[in-house]
Length: 301
Image (tube, rainbow, N blue to C red; front, side):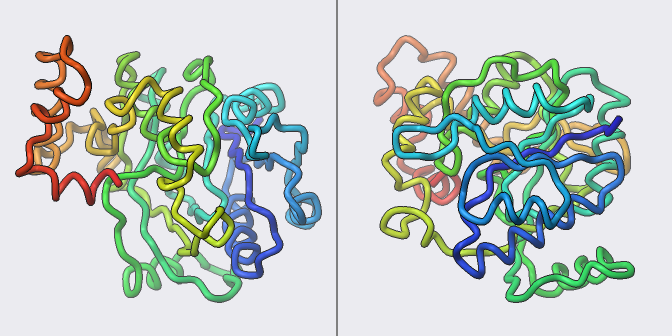
């Protein structure tokens, strides 16, 4: 029985670059120990890619009116079609290495409920990766030389025990807001939110947004407004890795260091709790005054 089930709803395999980076990512998953992979959806080229990569394909995911898979359906299908103790929803452009499984094992041995996440490393990838030999060592060298650590906003995977996230709103995948809600939900349920950035290198293969209407980033898409509504409002979609309660470092769970951005974020949460009775716009002006605007605009856009 595998330890982890990775599940994802890839984009169509019609764009040559998107197809290539998705195959790179999924191939890396299949090389991990104690992991099974489930791909969800009916996007063009997906069934063939799943077959060639030797992974499970479930086409019948429920979609939004715009034809995009719903995260609630993805979670349900993953639960019903896996036997693993841990589930992990992940974007199909993310390359994983063996340190990912080791981090999951470490956390599972210490906590019964949790959500594991991390910052990603952004990397330009223009060709299929060579997965022969000690491929992860070569990739690490490439990332250290050419990659860039992404800011602590936006999360590309969430790993958690099956007992967590039993009730998921009908969020639309590939749009902003739902990933922030995942952190908010864990904090509200008092589950440890564990940032494994110090222990794990997660690689995001850079791409454009040509797959979205108008080629605009997901946070400018109209479906994002629906995700924000389902999340319970703007305050619940401001949660990021800065709101983690723990970090995994050297195999141990420790409290995150109080950097300036994390201090500012905690102050915002305190102010929001004190002035909870005020309208959201007024709370916004109190909790995030103008002198913070520039910093937070970059962080939460």
